[in-house]
Image (cartoon, rainbow over all chains, first blue to last red; front, side, top):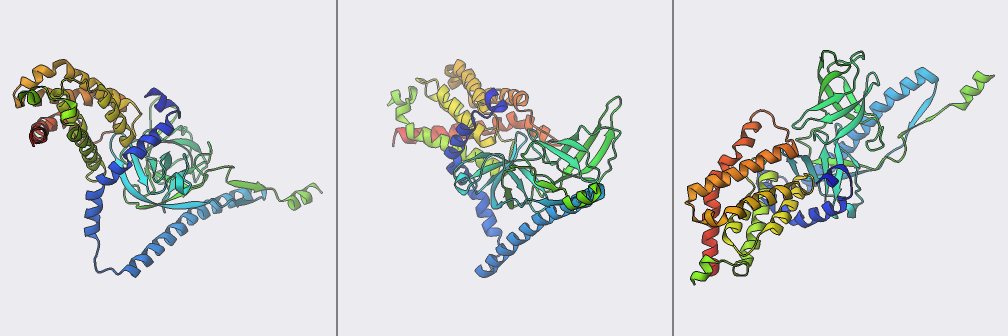
Length: 266
Length: 167
């Protein structure tokens, strides 16, 4: 128990157990999938469904790209103002996966996806939906993988406030709330500020929106604010997600414009 | 014939026993994944208590450990946490199982409720569940649900056992 909680020695054993209970979990979701099947509109023709599927997928990809573009705009303007530099973002590979079932129990909050190690899914890959970060892959079987949600209390994410660049750590509080920690009470923060991943730790890619600040309170004799935040992703509504490829390098490479430097030297 | 009733062996009901645990795991998973009912007493634990009290030539501790591990994998809790709880509750049952068999149903239900209460209290310290609003009440009401559920589980399993023995 202690080994599993504090180390990764039992990850393969857990994967073995998950593979064993996979048929049981499939059988357990039959009532839900039967209910969902009968909820569908039977008038819908097959082609229309396919088209709808295509559009939903395309829309998801575009929204994910839009998140990165917004981030880039901020980054470019900041760098241009400071140094006259240009920034370029490395495009990361994504994989679309469907949520098979979810568990939002008081013990642990996770999704099970229909993509596993046979599809190239690896541990610690970040998972997003159309609006923002959802969680991280914490166990993989050949055909499925589990995503621990950002609202789970075992998850900590290095983040920064998009408006000011102030760094902090975002922790899940269970249910649908997050807590932003280590923000000094001298820093500028307001309700509605967007919190995005900082890319530190090389687990979550840089610049994906995670949450919005919902309440700020100052604790007496404490150097930090107590900040609560709501996730921006549709954690309870999402049925399709994107699995991002592992972070190898910092996602933003800054290239100093040599021409400008050259003229400055002259 | 009476031997089969009073000293039930694993070999007499092995398929029923294995099938019941499988069904218990499916029901527990279905309650979590399909119906989002996180506060029902674990059916696998109730089945384990039932078989512990019925099959006397085994300790059921290995079964308890395996079922606990499967629960840990299913619920994404640290491996061994549910296994420890299942083992402890089974041990409690082993201590009194001869007397337990002789108790009337209402008394059995109350004892099972105490076991589930222990399960919840120990789970509270091990898992630190995040509870908000009504979920706090549901969490602590689980032993009461167990009182209602035990007669159903016990009667169904006894009926199935008798059918398996005398078919």
